[in-house]
Length: 385
Ligand SMILES: *Cc1c(COP(=O)(O)O)cnc(C)c1O
Image (cartoon, rainbow, N blue to C red):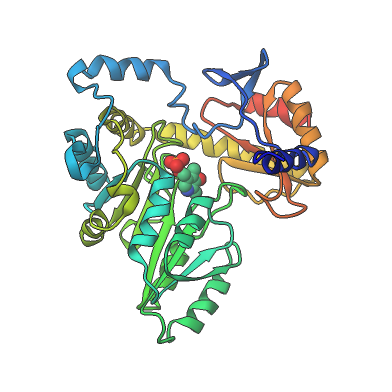
């Protein structure tokens, strides 16, 4: 028996249950994706504003960026020699956009979420997290020395009960409430204004809100749900990613300057990993300035999202979405896989999502809309449901 056999058996099991994950090569042009020589409308991308697909934008960036600024490696952490001007320029831009609060950049949203909580929590910290937070947040919680309790998804009444129970507990001198604004699998959202009201009733509480699916998409200037609801200053740790609507790579934190300084001194993924190439920072900065002005794209996205949600509900399906992520919950896994295949054959690239990513009997088609989709596309899709 070879040392590899155990792994091979596990892989076989995954395959038998239809749960084997594999890379698939694809080519993308504009709003289309091509797999196995079949061209489909891409309804699975996080490029919500169509900026990653925009060739002209890319050309403009390279035209404006001289070769001596196209720096392809930071060659070390920012604490050694990696702190290029492009980093400070992007942080200054973020800080200015987010009402003068401090900003700190990370190599990815994943780095950010596995690094911040372990750096800030000790055994006297309690984390209360929404049941459906992203895997990166779960990993961060697990790496931290905090105690943690999950509250029912989007159930702020449950959160309030837990806070009432724990805020007088002498074992904890800090409680961090962790949630996403828009959730990646249900496309629903936390009521941020209400969350902030709850926080204000308990003096030990800090808020950690991940806007990965909301940055670029919500708010007058695209700063996320926190901007939309006027609560940017009230969220202690406001985080997001450049990897989705912002068409780049990296994570950001908006916080108090003391928190920023503390993380620079304690956050392991920040200290012990080579910083991103400065050219990526320059691109993120370039994109961010565009994003501030894309009100029309945001409106269009909201319109088509509502249009699709209403049509899905009219067909009798469950649909919790209030955003550009529109799941169609079919329940049964095999049925969902078959339906996704049929839609792909008809030219719509939609992926099935099954347990354990979603709860048992919660299999779904997950549709991600982007600015390049229109209501005619959706009419064709709806006819196939
Ligand atoms: C995608 C995602 C991340 C990870 O961000 P990356 O920049 O892709 O590493 C973190 N949190 C949430 C909620 C996400 O959806």
